[in-house]
Length: 326
Image (cartoon, rainbow, N blue to C red):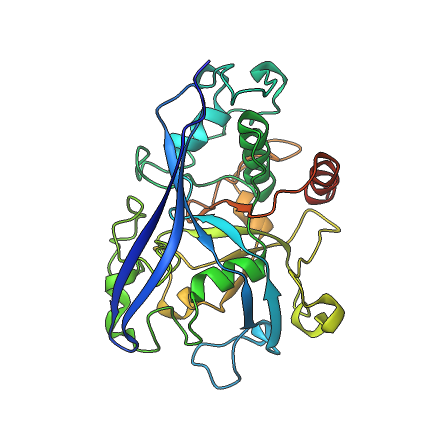
């Protein structure tokens, strides 16, 4: 049995930003190897803190669902420095790629894993696989990946909440983008309609934000844990302001963040929100349509988080019951 290899290092990030000057942040990073493979992924620890979720009324490109702003408190968590890649996702989506290997002390049976049915067509639409973000899966499918990874490693992983995602994107800033309000630096940090040649790119090719996280602006948009609600922020009272999560009551719509390679700059702002659309399945001929795949969302992927304080086994079970309902 191959052991889960975890390396922990302190990294010093020196990030030059035209609007903020040189920023110096010491962060803890972990690199995990998926048991039985040579595939690994890195995560950075996001510090706990408070921030203003949403956007101010005068922000250029702002939509009504981005307000009113509310101060929320976020507990520390680790977040993937890259979007989940095809190389990682295929170990889950293809039974032939998975192995019975698991972390020491973990009882894992790959034959008991709920896995995606074969997609109707190539989710990547020929735009690239190895080293590129995994795309085209539903939010439910992305959650099932996180559940598989949790069961295989003994470490609890999930999707980020909307609040966690925005907090990590802003990385201590309060401007439209993590690098400031000017579009002059957009090409340095993001793949978007103006520079992507209308295709997503390999992860990590652009500059990271001040906390060392890549592609939070553009490349592919990212699933979050939340059900989409236009009034989510209005409901954030003092009693709900700690680690807020809009828990699902139905399968659609869910919230997507970050913007994508085929978007204009407004969609790439830290506070921009996108609701999932049933039209993303419009070419799926199956009845019922797939729970696992969208035929028409090659611009949507995801990244994972793991709480710094790991939930108990009972808390994890309760979480999956809530997160996967719909």
